[in-house]
Image (cartoon, rainbow, N blue to C red; front, side, top):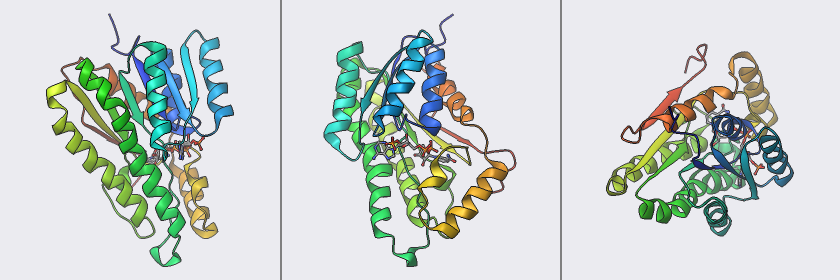
Length: 248
Ligand SMILES: NC(=O)c1ccc[n+]([C@@H]2O[C@H](COP(=O)([O-])OP(=O)(O)OC[C@H]3O[C@@H](n4cnc5c(N)ncnc54)[C@H](OP(=O)(O)O)[C@@H]3O)[C@@H](O)[C@H]2O)c1
């Protein structure tokens, strides 16, 4: 019986580490063709080579999601190489947390550009293909921070709330095209994400918190696989998961 993952062409942004890398490995093992986008080209090339060595089909394309043309190129190349695009995982993101009165305005801009605009550019790149195909699946990565706000995380949380709002609007708009939409909202998962915090005192707290409770990135990969593997008439709209130990 098909797992409904095998043979799918799946584009993943932020595939060079953490959740994106784990999803790529898991989905490739399940028989998907994964198209990897991120800025660190050496990392995605090495991952594509590793997946190919294990018998998978994979392609790595250097992509900065803040550049709409590069995101379009990522998806267009996937379609050119493999014939269509079945799934996009808009996963690239960063989390430089800090209280607003530290005025890290460059970091606010960066989070808005990557976490919100990057997701919109991913949607814009796949929609024309998926509307024409009358099939597809758009997976956007939010967070527990897309449900809860905590001091020090206002801007990050705002970007992750925005991802959920955009995803729900998209869900309603794509009904006529048989396109599925899923929000995945993880809690603390072991990745390089805390390294994007530039304020030393806040980084120290986060790293200690993650060391105590974070769960492996394969938890995310399994959540993605669950959503993708459903029969085509089942649309998993959101998965919110946390480490069992996580309080908030
Ligand atoms: N880990 C958690 O606890 C957690 C919890 C909730 C939500 N999330 C979300 O999960 C997503 C993935 O994060 P992660 O935890 O896996 O962290 P990570 O290990 O730091 O991975 C972040 C990924 O985003 C990519 N990225 C950053 N800026 C980019 C840009 N301008 N263009 C293209 N790619 C870019 C990075 O690749 P390059 O640097 O190579 O470009 C990297 O592959 C993020 O949206 C994050 O907010 C994570």
